[in-house]
Amino acid sequence: MTDTVADYLTRVRNAIKANHRIVEVPASNLKKEITKILFEKGYILNYKFETTDNKQGVIKIALKYHPVTKLPAIRTLERVSSPGLRKYSGSVTMPRVLNGLGIAIVSTSKGVITDKEAKKLNVGGEVLCYIS
Image (cartoon, helix red, strand yellow):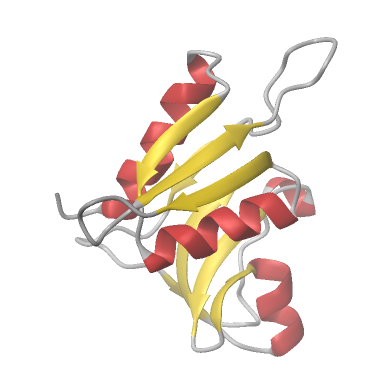
């Protein structure tokens, strides 16, 4: 597998469409940072990093749904930059997702952060994905 972030997003997207409560994803440092951002911004209920027999480990993500309507908190997950076509953005030209209602996750020299934090820190980087 070459694009592990796309696999991560696809597993979460498929779990949401199947109305699953928990999804397991193979762990990596980049995926852990993306999961932390999703938790901080309120898109998921909780997460847990578990170590397994191999060094990689597993991330268990508890997905968030509205208590009455059962609609998921995550509506869309879209991969932007791929291994074959990297998408970079400067701090001035940072993309806006749903006119500021969604987030773009950006890999910068300051770490993996959201588009709003990147503008605040005045750094650019590789735009990994859009979440709304």
